Amino acid sequence: MKFRKQHIVSHTQRVFVYKNKQFERVLGPGKHSFWDFNNQLEFVTYSIDSLYFAAPDAVRMYHTHSNLHAHISHFKLTEQEVGLLYFNDTLKGVVAPGESLYLWKDAGEIRLERIDISEQFYVEENTLKLIEKAGLNLASKLIKSPKTMACKPIYEITIEREHIGFLFADNELVRELPAGRYGVWQFNRDFELQTFDCRTISAQAGAHIYDKHKEVTSISHQVLGPEEVGLLYVNQVLKGIVPPGEHLYLWKEAGDIHMEKVDISNNLYVDDSLMTSINQSGLNNASLLFKAPTTQASAPIIDMSVESDHIGLLYVNNTLVRELPPGQYGLWQFNHNIELKIFDCRTQMLEVSGQEILSKDRVSLRINLSASIKVIDTKLAAQSVEDIESFAYNALQLALREAVGTQDLDDLLLDKLYINETVKELVDERLNAVGIELNHVGMKDIILPGEMKTILNQVVEAQKAAEANVIKRREETAATRSLHNTAKVMENNPTLMRLKELEALEKIADKIESLTVYGGLDGLMNNVVNLGRREAHV
Image (cartoon, rainbow, N blue to C red; front, side, top):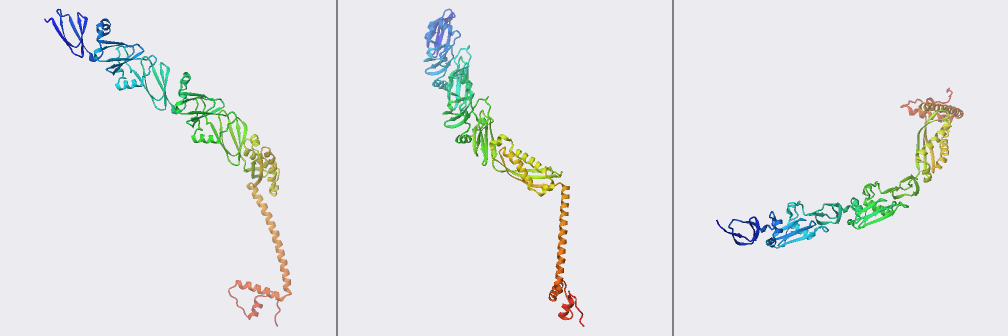
């Protein structure tokens, strides 16, 4: 049995010597000899390359045996401290809050940087980059005791361009985050991040945050009066229209925001230049209004046109406010009921066709009437009648029935102007009373029923036949008298008789192909045509 023992310790090792299970000393690098007569010594070897002193009873040993302090460093973090462990100026790991570290002093230069996360739980940019570069932002890399739950030490946040973030810790807003990269120590806290797109300009989605946390600086809040319309400009460009009474929330990050308020309590008209700008931007649309979700949407401007030779009457809340000449108009229609009645001031033709009317002698007639009317007082017409054409048509129809029903058919046919004059006289005053002028009335035609038409045609035919017979007899008498007079003249004038004979001979010669004459010229003249009585030659 050997009573003398030797133990060699390398530079990367430390050996604990126990005697009868009781700690005696620490052996550093080198060769060590011991007398052990009763085999009471025990040697436990530790590698300092692991950096951590991880004996099962490390805590008890360190606090019980002061001679261990020369070999082991002890660091204790509070529950509100995070540790950054550096070894030879190289970051080795992140230490969880409340942890105790026991490290080999001889392993190298050890430094623990403490960070108080009770007030400042944001990770500095340099520290964040250092941790990310070392790949230490992992739950598996966290330096902790077995009793501590593993988690990623840093909650990494990336806010994209033209976005804004709101960071909540334990349901309380702790910071507004513009575009960029951020990190927060997420030990002992429950974090929530809400991000919003500032390109929407409207911060309505973040209104609940502003209302609860008035210290928010990334949102501007504006309120419009009940008779105010807002024109929202961003970087000098018109971006939207805001309805009256609206609570408007806007992202300041959207750009240079300017709100122009328009009072519509006394003036609903939209300037031509503004109307052009709104139309070019396509903003006269209910879906593009800057409003709360509960606000009922409608197009902000009613675009109206009055054509040439027309007059428009503008009604606001059922009250006539203005007569509009021809032109283009735009009016704010928020909180107002706007109506435009347009009247054609040109002469209009009106046809009263196919009117079946009984004459005084009970003959059914179909009459077509044409009239021309013109609106001369639009206000009076609007107040008096709802439909000008229908009113004038009914007035002409009733007047036509009255005119025809008081006359016999023969009288109507003899005096066709009677209907025109009577209808105009009956209707003129009635139309003038409602602002309408009756320029002309004319009956186009009278259509008789089939049987009556046949009878009337027969009467006319008989009348014309009788007139023809009278004329025929008169002409026959005149012709006979003329023949009688001619005969008397020829009786006493042989030369005239001879001329008449020659005229008759000419007519005969035209109707025959050949003529044989005996006795020469005398035979021709005496034997072919003889209108007078001749005595026989002896």
